[in-house]
Amino acid sequence: MQLKHKGIICGVLAAVCYGTNPFGALPLYEEGVNTSSVLFYRFSMAVLMLGAMLLAERRSFSISGKELKVLGSLGLLFAASSITYYQSFRFMDAGIASTILFVYPVMVAVIMAVFFREKVTLSTVMAILLALTGIALLYKGDSDVSLSTMGVMLVMVSSLTYAIYIVVVNQSSIRMSSLKLTFFVLLVCMLTLLAYSFTSPDLHLMLPPSPRAWFYACWLGLVPTVLSLVFMTIAVHEVGATPTAIMGALEPLTAVAIGVMVFGEFLTVRLIIGIVLILSAVMIIVLGKNFHLRTITHTLSAIVRKTWRWK
Image (cartoon, rainbow, N blue to C red; front, side, top):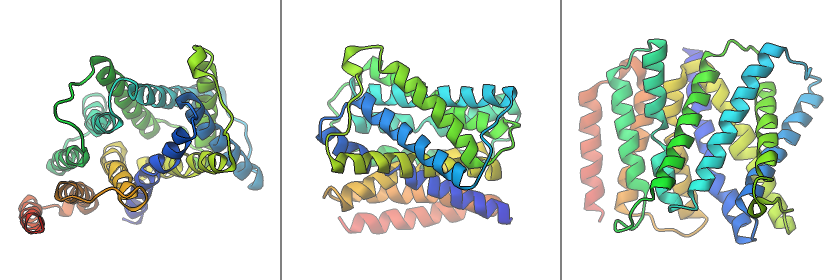
């Protein structure tokens, strides 16, 4: 039970930390830093921080050939997910992309059920449906805008590679500290992004142009990268891949909260209902075997009715 509580707490923290990406990325874009550079500095800062932590703890950096293959695969998967996700912004609104991205909990559940015989319970299905509905409500876009086929394909590839990343972490036989595992994954990811930056003149690396930009580059390296991935690794090992993926629905919720509190966006009835649905999905995961469909349905109905009265 204590391990489950630890896993749930880490899963929530991982999602919240990852959801702070806009707080670091948007100011860098405002200062003219391109996407390739934002990603590269996000991961390079993270590698430096993790390396310093490992040195301070006098941890060994040695790994076996078998471990290198797994860590290299994880690094490539995470890099592919990041690159395709950020590239999708060239073809569609970021809000649409972030909404589509969160089909990955469904992908994780399907992969675990088909390839690893994991039982898909009623609570899992209910949590996924609530999370996806809530995330759809968080999106504030123009309904008349048609979706780009290329953009959708890029986001779906990003979702799939991230889902496989979570499953590999869950099924891997590697037993090392979360710090060390995350260090090598991000090292491979950083090198992949460095190589990717040479594929086009438009993707050249840029130095952060100001002290403010350096601060946000460090923020991206620490909070939505180092802390998020370390917490996520712990959560996957403690509670499993599917529950951790579902708790990831807190990521866009965090982004919305930042938008309201930092960037002055409005908190609408639609957003409130979306937030309630996402929190309900996470509560179903927390309750586990104590989940009762009738109780959750009754509670949701009451909350939605009260919310609409505020309009």
